[in-house]
Length: 204
View 1 (spheres, rainbow, N blue to C red):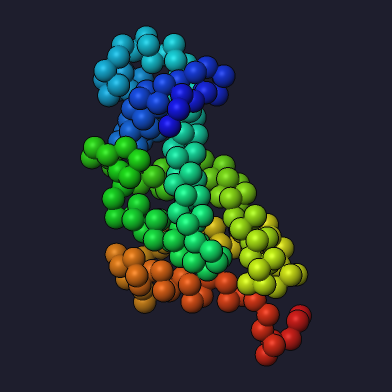
View 2 (tube, helix red, strand yellow):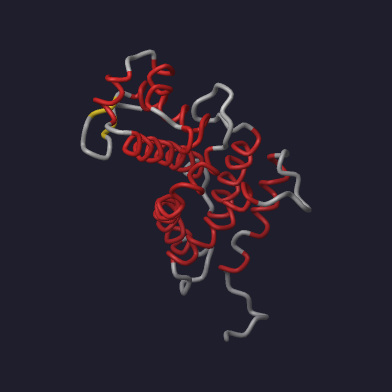
């Protein structure tokens, strides 16, 4: 990822962003500190402070970076597939992969998964970004006739995002979350069932 910009408009190198995100995931927001970031990045604490500002600003920058990387990864997965059901299935497989290995963005013995970190500390932002990713995918599915024209893209996108996040938050029941094929089949079968025309169901 190219050089990014922090909350105050300062340029931050990708290496320092990765070190900051890794430190946040490893220590959590309560234990997070700039000295630990400096040690992880191999630079001085003053360098970290000059690039990221104080502790709270550094946490916000790290959360924004982690969210951006996760959304980019999800977008890359879904754009490889042609139907909404397959796109949602691919995203579910990605999330289950994160559930299995918490260090997906910055390996190294991280203690908390990417999604749990984001949901606990910037859940509103993650939801907004995710919904914005899925809205155009729902519209495209409408144009292809996969889902009914009357479906509201924003509402359908929120439904999809909430369903996908449940793979991180809820324990498995009838589906083996460690089996990508099982996850893909499960999501493909049910994800858009409520978004298509059902002649046996009368409108309320």
